[in-house]
Length: 210
Image 1 (tube, one colour):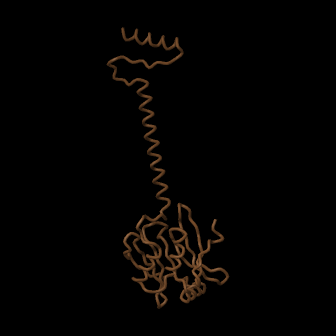
Image 2: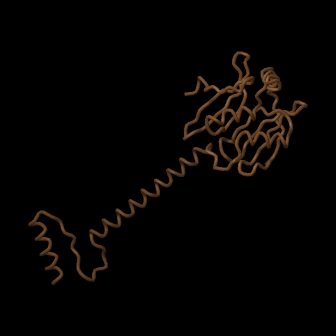
């Protein structure tokens, strides 16, 4: 009975002042209105923190081209691949656009081509698989001939492009018969594309790069 009187008194006081009140009685097991609001706010804040952490994890997984400190550079990956499989390196890139392995394409003296995978953390050769594709057309042969007579090889092209950022890929391209190296770099989260001259090693930003 006293409890009802206390609640009624508090309610009347709140209505008279235009405010609200959270009624409770000593010894009640039920949480008060204020407690329920606090608990809800705490859960919402925790959910928000979890969502933010998930977003950060997603961002990190999407940008897998950012190599951890101490990882092998593109030039070092090429050197490791050629030590294992001597020949002419035609390209190097992060396998599947990630940091799982460097993949170096090497053409041996007999014309056979191999994809050599290098661990980016240790430089260990993970495997060398022969490329049995039949796409060795006239353009491919012309590019190979140009590279064999060039002053700048794939490793030197990677070193030259490294002044522009972390090199994630080096390959060959041609424009109206002129063959040159291409290189992709990342710096401060920005990706850029470059061309590297076979004769001089001069680095120029790709005019088609946005």
